[in-house]
Length: 349
Image (spheres, one colour):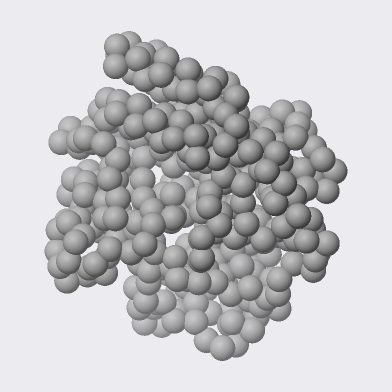
């Protein structure tokens, strides 16, 4: 089952029999069978009736409300997971500093290894000295992370690796007139950063849904601080998937010419674009660039296609969609809580 993204402003989400319809001015723009949908992402000014809300709650279809440009607003949840014992165990185990640092190390090592894979694959054609240097830097940091004994030091290593990674990320973008001079957010200031921030928000949403399905508390994780309103476990599980699902999609969408500079524009008259899921929202006047509607539809379509793509999942020795891989990783974390398994990040080769 997949995610239904509703992005057409002024449209309504309706039900007809077992079908979900996106309707605007009496015309059906899109429809799908309800049993094919595990989640609906409503982006911006979309109307939904009380009857439709009741149906979604009854069927357990996770419904997420985002601003048009990807800011998370909230979600419809039929009820919390019934596995109280699992959440109780989650709180107990994360209070164990040995468990917490051990699991946090795995998240960071997973992210760093998958970042290296993305750079290494691209560098097989580019043969760039700066990318080679970044690869070596990230490898050394991954080795150091494996021996880190506190969260603060581990986060420092992750930050240093991210600086090396995004320091050469611009070389992977071959599209004409698309430049990337480094990661920026709150707000993103160029087309590449707009898509990275939007992609990370969509990824966080997909992971949040799978965490809810398993019955874990999304706000209590090991690596990221448990600040008020911050879904720490979501951010933890995101780490190993950022390069695989978002960064690679952003590179592809520009290098293939699917999106160009003309798909972005500057204006003070529209809602602010997406920002990093973990960050607070900037002021409206601070946003310098926006993604047009057609570009938004293309991006969410490609992101959903990426989630639905199959890859080898080693623990099951079979091919699963990335969405199912995320679910298996959430289940693995649950087993770490209850059965003392070691968390192994999903790492591609």
